[in-house]
Length: 102
Image (tube, rainbow, N blue to C red; front, side):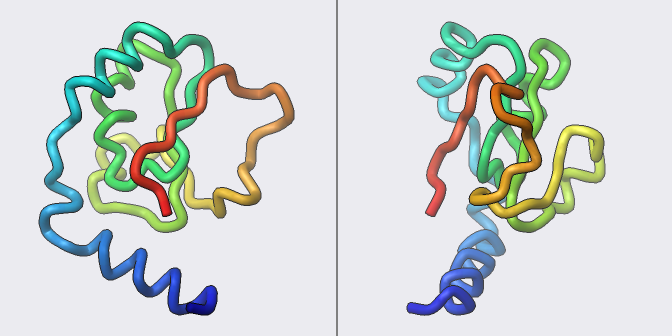
């Protein structure tokens, strides 16, 4: 599978109705509440469910290779970028989240 095929497959999967509507995972929420601190980045955040859930309590933002409609509710929390080239300076983040990324 070449890079174009991989991106196409990720886009196809992310457009599946179940993807954007997934509920938060209670174990992940508990782990974030217990262990995450400081500046937090969710790499491959998808629809941004965790970012949006914690936005009013934690310094959190999300990045993904494409945008999602729900990002329009809080655009300042999200950025499109390649996970291999994060727009974050060295030592610029304290906690990285990355769930179900390819």
